[in-house]
Image (spheres, rainbow, N blue to C red):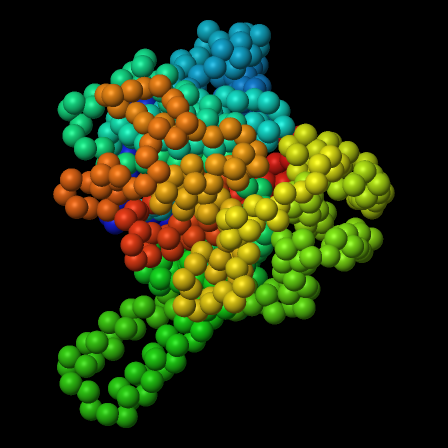
Length: 595
C-alpha cells in the first residue's frame, strides 16, 4: 500500500498543494544538472516521504543522504543540502565543505532552506569562511497533507518555542502557510482565535493580506468559510489524557510518525524478530478509515465480526455449489483479507497493553483527577509512581494533568514532589521541571481552581457515555469531552459570545473577526453568534471550517472533529491544521530535551 496518502476525497484540492510542493522540489533538482547528492535534514526526511516517491528522485539523478556530523561519502560533484534554518545544521554543512577542501575535493555546493533562509544561519557560513562557495536558495514548503482532512506545518518545537523559549517565529510560519492556502482557496471571511499565539497569528494574517492581497474579486466564493485558531495552551488537559480511539492508542503505544508505525515483524505474524516493518496508516486503507476513530473497545468487536463473516462465507463456498457471481463476491471480499489481518495483528498487540490491570488503574486515576474527586488519592498515586521509579514521562504526564486541573499544587506538595522527582530520577531533570513551570504545566497554586466551573459550563464530564453508538464526542475518552472540541462546537454553532465568561477563565485573549471587502479590522464578536447566511455555500454544499491547533493536535481531537462533522444538523466539514501531531508524551519530551 502506498505510503503517500490518497487525497481524492479531500474537501478541498489538497492534491494540488502537494503537487505544487513536489514540482518546486523537482525544479530545484533540475537546476543542478546531472548526478547529484541530496543531503536532507533528518527531520525533513519523513515529511518528504509523504510528498514524493524515492523512485522519482532517482529518475532525477539523485543519491539520497541524511545530514549528520559525519562527512558525506559520495562520488557526485554536486551536493545539495535541504535543511531547516537551524544553527547546528549550518555547522555540519560548514564542516563537510572544510573536510572536502582539506582533501582537495572540488564540488559545487547548494543549500536550500526550508521554508526560508535566515540571516543568522548565513552568518555562520560567513564565520566558517564557506559562504562564497555556496549557492543559497529557499524551498517554500509550508504545508504537508497528512491525510485527506489533516495538514501539518511540520513545526516540531512550536509548543516549546512559544511557551518556554518566548520565540514566536513559528507563528509567522503558520500565518504564511494559511495565507498560501488562501491564494488557492480564497480569503477566509470568518476568523475566530483563542490564545496568545492564535490571536497573534490572526494579526499576522491580516498584515500579510495588506502586503500580498488575495484577489477576492477574481476568486468567487471562498472554499473555506471559517478559520478557528486554538492555542494548545488553552487546553493542555486533553493531550495529557490517554487516547482511547484505535488511532489514538496506536499513537500512544507505537507512535505514529508521518502516517505510519514501525513495528517488529513478529507483531504482524512474522516468525522471527528482525528489521522493523513500516505499516502505513491513512485513508487509503478502507478498513482503517472505517475503524480508526472508534473507541478501541468497539474496534475489537468490529474486527471480530468481519473475521467471523469471512469465515462463514468460506464455509458456505466450500459446502455449496456457488454461482459464478457468488464466487465473484467472495473473491472481492477476499481482497480485504490483508487489511483485516493487518488490523487484527495490530489490535492484538494493543490489547496486550490495554488488558493489564495497570492500564485500567491509570485510566481510573485520570478520571479521578478530571473530576477533582479526591486530591489525596491522586497525590499519593503520583508519589507512589515516583517511589516505584516508573518511567518519568508517565509520572510527568499525570503530574501535569493533576497540576492543571487544580490550578497548581499547594507550595508544600509542589516542593515535596519536585524534590522526590530529582532524588528518584536525577538532578539532570532540573531543567525539565523548570521548563514545565515556565510553561505553567507544573506550578505552585496561587488561586482556587475554576476547573469545576469550566467542566460544568462546557459539559466536559459526561456520565453513561455509549462508546458503541455514541451521540457525543465524550466517547473518545470514555466520558471526557475534549475542552478544545467543545470550544470548536460553540464557535461553529453559536459563536463564543454565549460562553464569554468561560472564555475569560481560559488562558489568553480571544477574538472573532470578519475579513473581506467590508473590513479588515479585528473586533470582538463582530461575527453574528447564530449561523448566518455566510455559513452556507451558494451551491448548497456544506460549509468548510479550517481548525488550526498551534502547539499540536492529538489523533483523539481529530477523531472528535470527524464525529462532529458526521452528526445530523451539523452543516460543516472540518479540515485540521496543526504545527505537529502530538500526544502527552511527545509534548513533554520536547520540554525534557534541551533542543
